Amino acid sequence: MMLKPLVTALGLLSAAQAIDPFTWNNSTFLLHGKPYQIIGGQMDPQRIPHELWSDRLSKARSMGLNTIFSYVYWDQLVPKPGEWHTDGNNDIARYFKTAQEAGLNIVLRSGPYICGEHEWGGFPAWLSTIPGMVVRTNNTEFLSAAKFYIDHLGEELKDLMVTNGGPILMAQIENEYGSYGNNHDYIATLRDMMREAYGIPLYTNDGGTQTDLDGGQIAGALAETDGTPQSGFAARDKYVTDPSSLGPLLDGEYYITWLDQWASNNTFETDEGDESAISTATSDLAWILNHNASFSIYMFHGGTNWGFQNGADWGDALEPITTSYDYGAPLDESGRTNDIYHAVRETIGAHIGMDNIPDLVAEKPLIEISPITLKPSVNMFDALPDPIHKTIPVNMELVGQSYGFILYRHVTADATSGTLKTGDAPRDRVLVYVNGKRVGVIDNSYEVPNTVDLTLKKGDVLDLLIENMGRVNFGSEIIDQRKGIVGNVTVSETVLLDWELYTLPLVSPPTASSSTGVTKDPSVESSPIFYTGTFDVDEVGDTFLELPGWTKGVVWVNGVNLGRYWTVGPQQTLYLPGVYLRESGNSITVLALEPNGSEGSVQGIKTRNWGNNPDPDMSS
Ligand SMILES: *[C@@H]1O[C@H](CO)[C@@H](O)[C@H](O)[C@H]1NC(C)=O
Ligand SMILES: *[C@@H]1O[C@H](CO)[C@@H](O)[C@H](O)[C@H]1NC(C)=O
Ligand SMILES: *[C@@H]1O[C@H](CO)[C@@H](O)[C@H](O)[C@H]1NC(C)=O
Ligand SMILES: *[C@@H]1O[C@H](CO)[C@@H](O)[C@H](O)[C@H]1NC(C)=O
Ligand SMILES: *[C@@H]1O[C@H](CO)[C@@H](O)[C@H](O)[C@H]1NC(C)=O
Ligand SMILES: *[C@@H]1O[C@H](CO)[C@@H](O)[C@H](O)[C@H]1NC(C)=O
Ligand SMILES: *[C@@H]1O[C@H](CO)[C@@H](O)[C@H](O)[C@H]1NC(C)=O
Image (cartoon, rainbow, N blue to C red; front, top):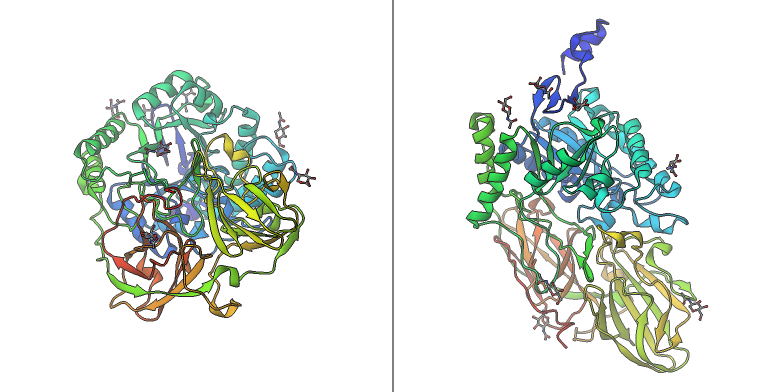
């Protein structure tokens, strides 16, 4: 680093300059001409409070990692067309500088499609308002939107590229594209776009099968696999024949455990305490290391889907990802090490020498917060924004909204009765109210959602409060991820026309002063209520918020949206990092979407709870 400017100043063409700073031959990566085995792990800056980046990165180093793999979320950086936001957790350049200071190199995974169980796989919601847009194809509209993002990111990270003396070694094109399609023009276009914007070596990462590799591989980019290393490497050796895609083997995502989805019957994915699962993982990692190959553990540290950033998978129905993205990772959601961390550290140490791994980083104790009494403060329906009138309801993206909730209100013109249909599908969870009383819940995360039968009299007010539970991040459903209502709302055969739309992105909760009414006592039929309270702590520290008796909703502490809670589980507590607390005068707001009179307090505990409860809306 010190030598380079000196040499340039002297105008000499040294041997060091003639060597590509990062390249490879067929058996190894070469960093500044020396063999470099990537001992990597995945950790995404936008899922971690920026105040904690340095802590998490130094813990990656102390597990023995030399490289961090990071996805970048396009939707957070470009929340509106033409805007570019790099504040707070979106300051990707600062995160990478922090990684460099911690002694880590970087592999950039900037998509534009990233999957990652993130909202719409990283796509900004506004893409679906652009006529002619088809995501993940060689489509002019898509490529032009992607280019804005890639070019801006390239500019932002310019000084950090390995070609300019920085720690970013290479960048991934798209993400497991071969499991989705095989349009090589599209991947080639992205390759050229990234080559121009980043100027560093590129690679593709696909599943370890012939179809995946055939679909994803592109000339001039190293082809790599993820998943089971033994079969993935064998597939790469067998099916990739283009010499310009050959090079050392990298398992771009070695899964120790798996992601979590909300559902009464989904249990928390973890290997903790499971000796045999941990030994399978460490023997796979040792096998990779002994074959002079490279890996990235997915996830090294998962973090949290703050606010409404979670994505969803699609099985037979929507499978929304939990707020916690703990992933059973070696470094847990709260940045604490577990059995897996120590086992992996030993494995890496056995290969590179324990002396080459920095000492463990000390961990601060967690804190408890005694029960905080919360009082009903604002009824959501008394604190609505100005409505937007539409004869036929439109989806939330068309009224400029990306995340959160949207309310559709209709005043019955002619009496009607029958089964309610909210457009082409529930997108995603529809709370149905007549004259302010909840009469049903239609939820697209069930293969067969509940049906709601209505009898509407002239003048009855029908409210449909619709929650975007996370856009699908994987599979063919990714094409259409509009939320709210698409199509007509009907009761029996009657089309209901004339709607007031109220956007409720809930970036911050409404305050009592924005409310027009006095909050009534909650009952099982109540419309959503924001509860508020204040609390002090003896000492600031990390904690897990437990919400006994609360069904479903969202929590804010000191204005930070900690994410969704849902009694169904498996997540039963929300991570509250100490960096969001102060010693006195902390404020908390909890949205109870389905208040039933049982809620009243929230407490902070030191050990997370995982578990399940039946969905009260499906048991009837
Ligand atoms: C890898 O081997 C192939 C086949 O022998 C050769 O064509 C290619 O140039 C080699 N790649 C590198 C990066 O050395
Ligand atoms: C790759 O480079 C390393 C380090 O220079 C060398 O030991 C190895 O033989 C090379 N492998 C191939 C296939 O060229
Ligand atoms: C793919 O898109 C690029 C950029 O718009 C364009 O130059 C190229 O012609 C397209 N290829 C095909 C086969 O449509
Ligand atoms: C949970 O229940 C749903 C619906 O019955 C079923 O489709 C799914 O496979 C179950 N999941 C697990 C993990 O058992
Ligand atoms: C890995 O590299 C070492 C040192 O270059 C060499 O002795 C060994 O044979 C290689 N192992 C494999 C499986 O290629
Ligand atoms: C919605 O209803 C209106 C009025 O009946 C009709 O003109 C329109 O075609 C319907 N739209 C759809 C998608 O069915
Ligand atoms: C309210 O909901 C919670 C969570 O689902 C449940 O534990 C509690 O029993 C319910 N209370 C009433 C009065 O229905």
